[in-house]
Amino acid sequence: MSASHNASDWEVSGYIAGGDWTRSFRSRTANYAALYGFAGGGLGFGGRGGSISLPEFGGEAAHYSYTRIHCNRIFSANDLDGCYGRLTTAGAGAGAGYGLCSITAVNMGGTLFSSQDVNGPGFTAGASAMTTMGIWARITVLGYSMT
Image (cartoon, rainbow, N blue to C red; front, side, top):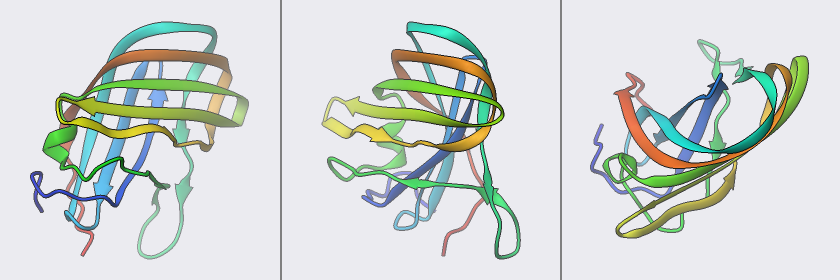
């Protein structure tokens, strides 16, 4: 498990709750998974109680669904920590719903990923749309081995 191992097979999952944008990133190549928060400000309208990804069932336990992202260049988990970024969301639902989310990350070395759609069904209440600019920050390493 290495936060400094460069990889191009990153996947992302997560939830948005009351302005708290938290995403789990993982890479099989790096054998690494971590929880990142996105802190920023922007513009939006509407109101929503947040959303959480629907779990995938199978194997030994349920886990949140992940979406593969296209990387503009290979990067490590350490590269993502502290990156500038953009997060754009839109969604609606009453109980079950569907959310649209697009994410971007850029550091001094260039763009890691740009406008990657991480859309999907989830549990939500309300309707909203917003775009924010901010910073990705690692919250914690997840104890998840992918080998």
